[in-house]
Length: 244
Image 1 (tube, helix red, strand yellow):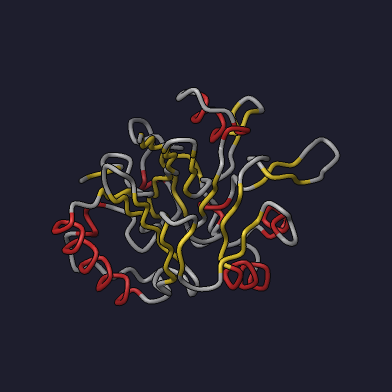
Image 2 (cartoon, rainbow, N blue to C red; image 1 turned 30 degrees about the vertical axis):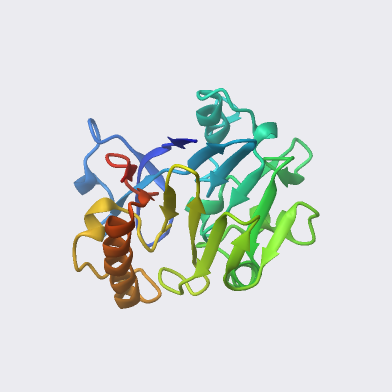
């Protein structure tokens, strides 16, 4: 089993909810609009036996015409065609931007053509209803009625080793994942548990659907994970992508 953090870098985001690349060595946060937040974006890839699992898909940005997520996978010797599962915690654009690609004719297709995509049905319906700027409906609409999409309905288990649970923390249908491997239990908390620092504090975020619940869940998960030896994966923490 191997875990690869696939960092897409740092960005600032203000009330427009547009992600703007940010270089911490040369850029100043004070030069950005008042209220701008600094956000790091980092999907994960897990190789486990014959499985190559991608957790969330980043912003979907491209460099030199190649999706950054594909380039990051290539750095580990993995092609988009080899990915077997795509797990989506929720469909905000910084987590689902790499779900699909648009061809020269303006048509969208799945970025990982041989993978099964696991999506909460209620999250998709909510995203399509709410729309821009939090959700890029033109990019995720391809999921509707696609044969490679496995719709999830509440909590459950995928193929006997991936547990998923709706929390209603960061967003109303946000879900988290536990992946059981022979070596260790991996935990991905998405935006409920995005950074190591938040796991150790009483932080309540105003941008969460239920910030108090997120804080309580983080404290619960951290205590349980420490006791049971979980490996935590942090989507918005490039400095400490994983611990445990």
